[in-house]
Amino acid sequence: MGIVTFKVENRDKSVKELEIPDDMSLSLMEALKASEYNILATCGGMALCATCHVQVMEGLEKLPIKNEDELDMLDTLPDAMHDSRLACQIRINSLIEGAYFRILGPEHE
Image (cartoon, rainbow, N blue to C red; front, side, top):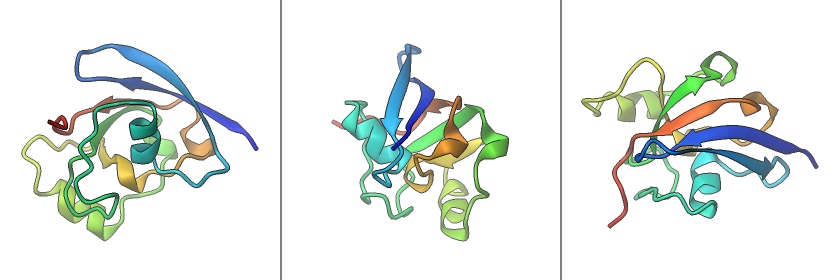
């Protein structure tokens, strides 16, 4: 088992470094929720709602390319950028070591 370390910027601009085990097959969305970030994640990680929208500030080039479902959902967002991703579609593994993500999706009520 390894530990993957990456940074997360919350909506209030605070930045924390997270250390997440890479042996649990977690998505970034699941890791953020487990770390008590306020992520709506309405669809539960199926790339159907875009409420786990993040911006990849560092490390975008190391991530796997977006699949069709993710591209389709990002196309529905007025604030999506070239470095936008759905946190539910990013797996916690060595590829995100040192990455920096900014949470953009809506907050859970």
